[in-house]
Length: 110
Length: 118
Image 1 (cartoon, chains in turn purple, yellow):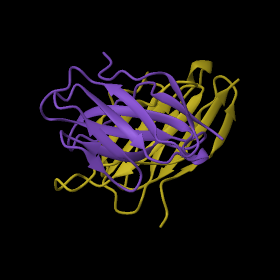
Image 2 (spheres, one colour):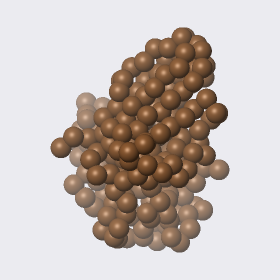
Image 3 (cartoon, chains in turn purple, blue):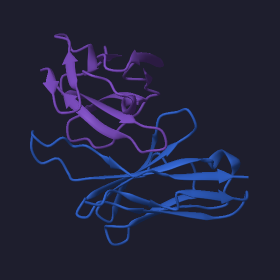
Image 4 (tube, chains in turn orange, blue):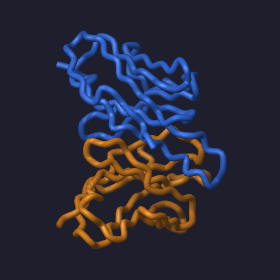
């Protein structure tokens, strides 16, 4: 059973903020939200993770709703190099085995 | 520093041949994972090692698939009598174990080995 639901594809103009949504309505109290991305012909790359507080790092921001049933990954100033498939994953912290879905294919348009 | 290295990057095999795919994890990483990624799909878990111990092989699709990590570093994924449905990218990932809240627990992936079975 899929634990997360993401739109299959999105476009975003270069330089604008890219907002990628993820629904995880069945998330349990000890599960974190992880985001990875996969650029063409490369392996997935970790972006960010969070439990219930909003998180920010050098790559992105993660906004998690108060009920934790959904979240949004924000790339504040998208560049062409951000074109990739973005995966939202819910997982117990410390459980390194990841279950990927089909993700969102984000295309940054010049 | 060096990341996860996989070889070969590309492999073409005739149906029925055996293949071996190699993974060199990041030095010192305890955990090692193999994933299979079919075209247009997300990666799917195959097997997991902690040091030399194979703790989970629930994702291996058949007994034709075998993985080993004899010295707790380099790992090999072997596929016997390859079939066309084995065509995919095989991804290897490694990580430290999560020890503290501040640890990300992230997996570091290699670029994968693309297997095409004719």
